[in-house]
Every structure is written in C-alpha cells, then in structure tokens.
Length: 307
Image (tube, rainbow, N blue to C red; front, side, top):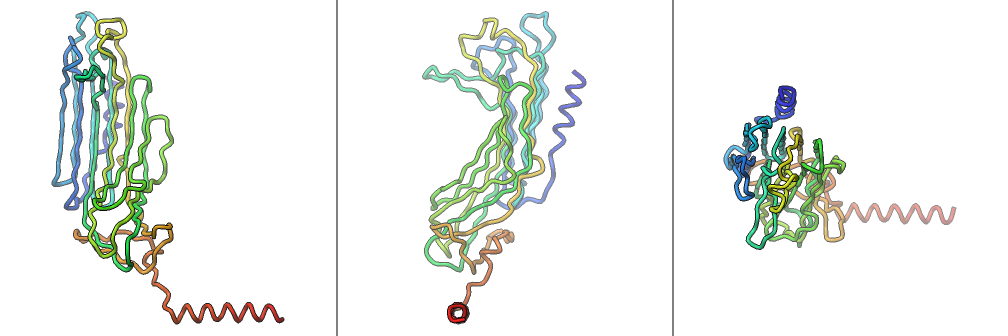
C-alpha cells in the first residue's frame, strides 16, 4: 500500500498557482462509495468550486472496512485540481482503488430503471471574456487553436476509464466544431481547433472556453449486488494529467468559405492581448498597390509571349 500511496502522491503534485483573469472559474469533484453495505443509491462527494481565483483542488483518502469482516480494508484515494487563466488551463485527476469492494462503485438507479455511473473524479477550468473583432463587414468564423500536452491512463480499462474534453461556447453564433473529446486508449492530439461561425464584425461576443477531465469507475447493475460479481474486490488506478498544459496558441478569423481575412484587430474587455493570427493582422493591400501589381503581371506575361 505504501508504494501505491507514494505513486499517487507523485502523480498528483500538479496544482499550480497562476494569476487569474476576471471571468475564470474552476470546479473539482470526487465521489466514492462509503458504505460497506452499499445498496446502489448512496454516494459521498467532496466538491470545490471557485468562481473568483480560477483555481480549485480536492483530495480524498477513504479507508472502508470490508463488509465480510475478514478481508483487508478497502482504500479509495483521489485527487483533482483545476486552474484557469486568460490563455492557459491546467486540469488533472487521479484515482487509486485498492482491495475495493466492487459493489461500492458509484452508480445510480434512475426512476426509469436505467443505470448511470456518477463522475468519480472530475476537474474543470473555464475562462470567459468579452471581445470585439473589427476590420471586416458582415459575419465571420472564429477559430480557437489550442495546444495540448497531457496523458490519460488506466491500469485496467475494463474497470476505470479517463477522458478529456474541450469546448467553446459563444452566444449568438453557430457552433461549427465547438466540442472535442477523447478517452483512454486514444492518442492525445498536439492541438485542438474549436470554432464558431456567423459572428458579427464590430459587435461584442462572449466566448467561454471550458477544459475538463475525469476518471470514472465502470458501474455494475443493481442485480449484481450480492452476487460474486458484486462481492468481488479490485485494485485499479487511473489518471488524467493535463497539468502542463492546455494553452491558447492563436485565434484565426475566416470568412464563410474559410478564407483568412486580413486587416483585423481584436479588443478585449479584460485588457488581455489575444494572439490573433498574423494573417489576420496583415494590412489589406490598397487599390493602387493592387493595380500596380496586376499591371506588372500583365507586362511580364506580354514580354514572355513576344520574346
């Protein structure tokens, strides 16, 4: 058990302090079975929500006696942390279940008779700001390009899974590719692009970026409680480690056809300087310059034809 505890402590040293932007928040949640006579309807949760500093963390260490009175005690250890700043999100969770009674999994029997697994470990960080993009006419599409650095893992994917999700929401726009998720066993992409369309030039918009990770234990069914499947004990661990980091690499503004629009500027109510793509900030060629350029091309073509 000591080696497992040392492993968990090393994995969870990921709560990082950072200056926060107004409009950031963080949320963590850890839930576990806390009753040796689990009936499928009981769970205990520790929740930490901070809408002011954009940083929250939760830890739990539960020792539960086994219901049979003879097996070793059960251990449930977990950690979740989340931090949001203007352009960087750090989220991580980890779980360690050792000699854990299978019918102590967190699951819920709904009124319609269906089963649902509650989130066992969850961390989310979010940033909201009001920005105005000027320099064009009509509507545009906005792409948030995020760089991603992290890992998902589980010692037994049949018992514990992990997932990562990133989402963009902008009221008044049309979500095009505004949600991206992947789970244990899938390759972690180096970047993610989230986009929204039909946004008005010169009008304020309020984008919200939310990054979340979770670990959850596979649920058993109500009929499994009291059977060998429900009475079995397991040892399993898992993690979702994105503590360094998810970062806003750039913003790209295009028209409806996907063409980059030059000569734009972006203003933020928070005063943050967003990394607008250099193609968007390049000056628009003036009509005189275009005429000289086209004239030069005609002259070159004519010279080549008659030479």
